[in-house]
Image 1 (spheres, rainbow, N blue to C red):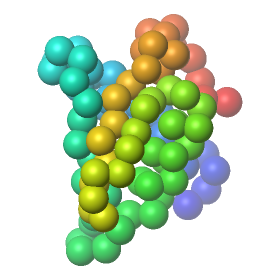
Image 2 (cartoon, rainbow, N blue to C red; image 1 turned 90 degrees about the vertical axis):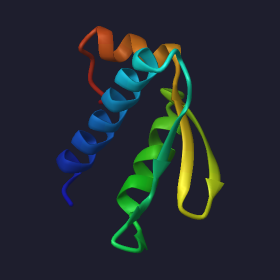
Image 3 (spheres, rainbow, N blue to C red; image 1 turned 30 degrees about the vertical axis):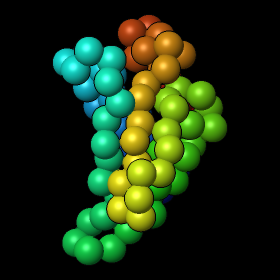
Length: 85
């Protein structure tokens, strides 16, 4: 995967969490990290990146899922049309 594709995947995840936040009263979303019975390492690193940037708050639920919630910083980034770079 190219750096541009990784950046796009992270931004898409952030947008999904933004939508989830407003559709579900600010609740955290459960994100399955398994794809075809294997851990999707690209998704895991995207979650970790967004958490490191404080755009989301996440924690491991169990070996196949994370619990994640967009932060105010993440909301501001989406609403301003900002970029992760």
